[in-house]
Length: 308
Image (cartoon, rainbow, N blue to C red; front, side):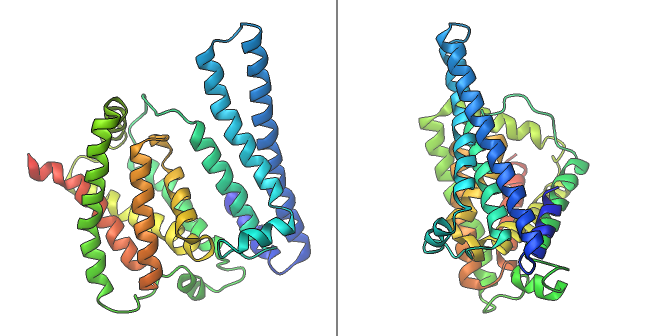
């Protein structure tokens, strides 16, 4: 459905009717989110006041309904041209673009629901089929989002995504060095988490161990790292960074990792996303980002084998 909406939105960059349909669809999603958020908050407030719900459940409901409703309200507010112009002064978006509007709405809803999602304590292991079913649509979305086959031929879309050699050959060395730097940053954040929130950090580790329990050999770890590096960098650093900047794209990158909820692991993903975004900008290419991302994920997976 989302890919279909982006096809419509790209047609809307040049034609009035698909543009209006995209705005209606995006505004409808935002409006539904606003109604759901408001209804959840109002209903649980009523239940709490009548004594039918305890304080913990009331807080959990507000933590979900509040951010989702606010995300919907902001999505509707972004329909106002003046707001789009103000936002364009901060991040390099194009006011009036249906593609940008759809991305703003979906991004707000992604962040809104992430805020209220509790840390998963029970989850099923991912399989190769699960990963491909999840990641291939994201890869397609990256190309469709920048207008492949609609506004741009495939080679031009690839260039827009940064799938070109970096500005200088030494950026490949930077990409390799960045793997070690990212590992050091991640290690520091995890050690802080062990001290500040040890129970939460243990839950995060347990969730990760269960999720990726089928990828417990070097070949599987390499597959997992390369897939994530190619897909996520194409979408977030390739498609989003040039239009939404490093910080916004990194927030969306962190919000996509919903299994971590709001935790030090989310902070870790956010910081790494910022580093990858800067690499994308200064190297003028997404390819070094893929090398760093894949190398980092592979190193994280293989280090336990080396230490055994």
